[in-house]
Amino acid sequence: MASCRFLGEQGYTTIMDTGTTCLQLSPQPGVIGLKLTGNAYPALILVGLAKRNPGRNFDGTAAEDMQYGDMPAKSAKIKEDSMFQKSDTELQAYMRSLMTSLSMGDMETVALEMLDKFIKGTKGNYTSELLNDEIRNNSAFVSYHQAFLKELQAIIKLALYNPHTIKPVSMNLLNFSSFLDKATGLGITVHQVWSAKAELINFSVSDSGRYSHWNATLKYTFYDHFGLDWEDIKKHGDDIFPKYHTGDQFKAWYILQHYRKCRPFITEMSRSVFLSGRAI
Image (cartoon, rainbow, N blue to C red; front, side, top):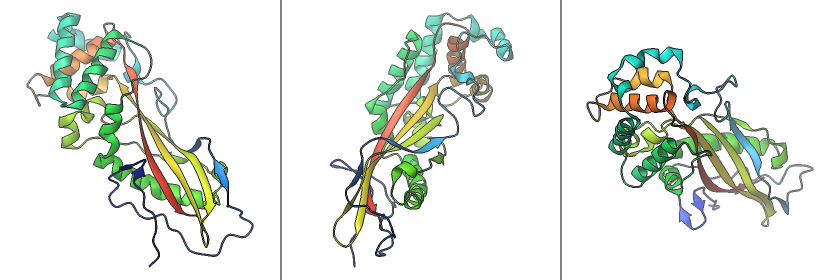
């Protein structure tokens, strides 16, 4: 039986891409007119893009959960809530309790870093290798990658292994909503990513004898908003789990963002996977 390469190797680290299929394609003698040997494309090649951009809704308007200090009319009734009378310091303590009650280990570190950035209102995206490591072998990401890979294989073959002719796939949004995610930190810090893109790095095609092969690194970049909109309060404002006052903690977050001086931001996450397969 002919051997074939499998996905899931990044540098020297084995990645848990359970169920990922081999990229071996049909062992036909070749495609007429296609010269593959020695072609290399070191530049980033966009192969996937979500339907909305970071900070924007699907229609291009500004995302509500990225607004701050705007005191929206739709949320005016929150002024009647007892939480609204609390000081910034008290509200920040409520929010800190929310972060620590729904995270643990390295993800508690991430959650508190994000809270600190939110309170200080510093500009720029938030990035963290701890957060990237958390999604590395997360089961939701593994399933997401396997689904995207099937589409990517098809468009690479359709482009005759010339990545510059690839038309980017419309990407779905990765969702961290399992009980484990909610309990350990990805639920409160990310939950569902807002936007995403996928790029091939160092795509190359080479002749190893009887067959030609291609390889590349597939880089995912995910974006999320660390902020709340009014729908979040309508959904979570009465929560009593994991603590009886969890709903108040969400209200504290909303008040700090929309009625005080705290500032939401974009969280940027990345994940790379090495790919290799038979070209023809």
